[in-house]
Every structure is written in structure tokens, then in C-alpha cells.
Amino acid sequence: MVAETSSTKNISVTLKVWRQAGPDKPGKFETYQAKDLNPNMSLLEMLDVVNDELERKGEDPIAFAHDCREGICGTCSMVIDGKPHGPHKGVATCQTYMRSFADGATITLEPFRAKAFPVIKDLITDRSAFDLIQQAGGFISIRTGAAQDANATPIPKDNADLAMDAAACIGCGACVAACKNSSAMLFVSAKVGQYALLPQGQPERDSRVLNMVAKMDELGFGNCTNQYECSAACPKSISHDFIARMNRDYIAASFRQAFTAKSTSTAGGA
Image 1 (cartoon, rainbow, N blue to C red):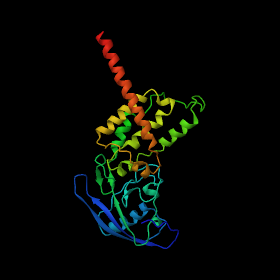
Image 2 (image 1 turned 90 degrees about the vertical axis):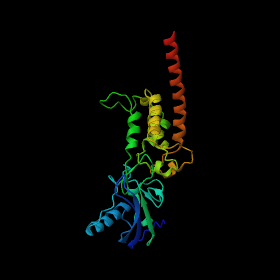
Image 3 (image 1 turned 180 degrees about the vertical axis):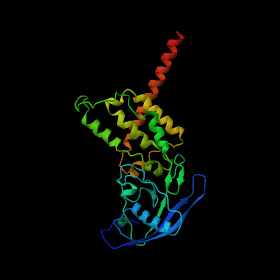
Image 4 (image 1 turned 135 degrees about the horizontal axis):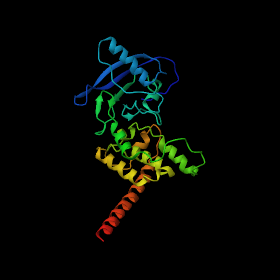
């Protein structure tokens, strides 16, 4: 329940938190009371308060991941009341504040649910599958050294803006958690698109999209059915238009790969 009030009156909430001791252990929801909370604290700060109380009681604290707490790393990913990152659009879990919830509200917290994101403990999932996809092609072959002058490689402003939009992806996995098929197409299309729009990304353009899509499929992510829950849940508002761009690149790269293979085979036979 979203309240979003500027009141400074402290609030109390009931938490239903998914507790799971490990990847191969059964899990269940446990209920906790969080009382007398400053409405301007973040949801993660609220969990810190709850964990302090659990530790004082000698109980196991709730495991959750976080790092920057500034909405730019994606580590804090969790599902809040059925929505990846929570009730607001364009923000990460760490940017969700307790003033977003009414006094007396019940808040349900659970990890991202996807075959490719196994639960490590409680609200922490293993999202290293994204790293493997990135390693399959998310790079460019360019010499390191001093940066070129800004105008050394002219790039149309529209392309530069779109590339920056794609590069805003923080790899949090909300797109996967929001999709009924656990598809990673929005993530992959953003990582493909940020290079495909720039001249520096052209040498590996075909191999990049083919390899990254193949790795995505290999890791067990589902298919995209174009219902766009992914872009709705994305904390950086990455557009699903990048998926269409990647599909076009993938089809073109597949044809070029097949044509090259056929030409090589024909030449070898001759």
C-alpha cells in the first residue's frame, strides 16, 4: 500500500519476509513487527533496524544484499509487495522509503524468482548469470591508452543519446523478476545496444549479439513474449525498444553468419 506522505510521525509495519537458509534448503515466509520507524528512513535502513533487534534476541538476521545505496549498482534487488524494487517507477530498492507505506501496512519481501537466479539465502539471489552473458560478448576490441579527443570519432547525437540510455542499465535483474517467463531480453538488448549504436562497437557487432543471446538461452532464461513488464519494472526505465533493435541485429547477424559459412564451404569444395 503506497502512502507517500511527508508526515514526520513514526509508523509501524508488519513484515512478511522470505527466509531460506541456503540454495538447497526449503524456504518460507516469517512475520516480524517493525515499530516506531522514522518514515524518512529507507526500506534497507528499516531492515537494519529489524536485524539489530533480531541479533539482540540471538536470532538469525535477515540476509539481504546492498552496496552503494544510491540506486546505481543494482545489488539491493528484491521483490516488495509483488513488484521488483517496490511500488515506485524508476527507482531501486534502496531508494524506496518507509513514507511510501501507510502506518500499519503489511509489507511482503521476497527474492527475485527465476531459475537462472538461485537463492543464496533469504533475500539474496545469485545473479552471476548476468556476468556470464556479459563475458560472452559485452566488450569491444580497442587499444587501451590515453582517451581520444571528443571529436575524433564523430557520432550522431541521437545515437549517442540512445547508447547512453542503454548504458544506464545496472544489471539488477528486475526485468527477469518481472517477466512471467524470466526472460533476460531487456538486459541483453541494453548491453548489446550500447555498443551497436557506436562505431567502436562495430567490429564485434555480429559475434556480440549471437554469443550473448546464445549464452542467455544456455543459462536457462525464458523467451520474450513482448508484454513489457521488464521495462515497467526497470529502475533505470530502459525502453523495450532495445529488444526490437537487438532482434533485428540478431536476424541480420544470423544471415551473415550462414552466408559466410556457405561461402567458405563452397570455396573449400572447389
